[in-house]
Image (cartoon, rainbow, N blue to C red; front, side, top):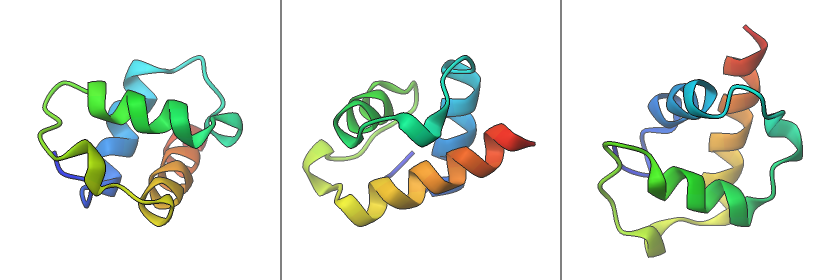
Amino acid sequence: MKWTDVQEIAMALTDKHSGIDPQYVRFTDLHRWVTELEGFDDDPNRSSEKILEAIQLAWIEDAAE
């Protein structure tokens, strides 16, 4: 997974952190959790607030389903 795989990352976060409400996750925690996902293989420094926001929004949508 790369930072641009927003939907795939969101689904993986839903599976791994099912008891967490993604709406209240701080970007510092989100960044760490994404980089710790199995299969994540991208430079941790390539993320941005915009990318993290997109992942968080996709995670909120995925968790609501």
